Amino acid sequence: MNKSQNHGIVEQFVNTVMGVKSGNQQQSLNTSIATTQRLDIRAVLVYTLGTILQILVMILVLLGMEKLVIFIDNNSSFSSWFSTLLTGLFFAILSIRSRIFSLLDNTRSRQTYDQVIRPRWSPPPLAFPIVWMIIAVLRVISSVLVWQEMNHQFLVLPLILFVVHLALGDTWNTIFTVEQ
Image (cartoon, rainbow, N blue to C red; front, side, top):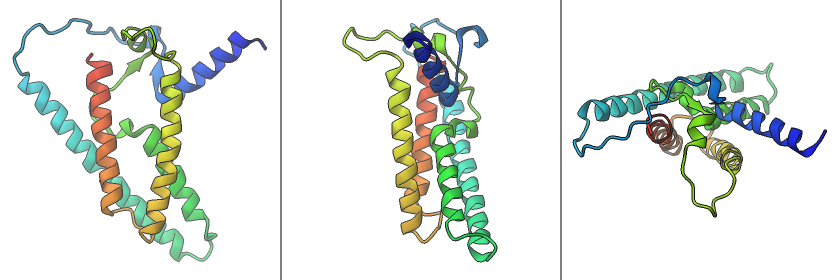
């Protein structure tokens, strides 16, 4: 297997994990740039409501996870490490793909990323998702540590602020990447 094939496999894996579709799978992009300075009240309301609803859905999912972990911890047929493993998997999914809880259209494509104008000194486009996956791993580790320190509770301020952070980031990505 040569170097270019390895690069293609890595890029395909990264795009799959990050939810990026190839250009031919993408819906047509709206590449028009607004020339007006007027505030789009409808867009502000849609993004605000979408973000708030995503936060509420993720908080409900935290509540569901808390109930599930309480059941697992209180059931003697499960090993003591099982709830930690399940929690780690939950935070991995939440960290990498939190936008699945968003009601906003956050479809991304390779073509969208290719259209971003970057300075000459910027790293290659593939570096960005790789760095974000490393950040996601660090998010998982820190979330599990917070969860353990909070006596296996999910509805605690640090984790609620974490889902708020994820929802705000998803909204920003939708505005920047999808809406351009």
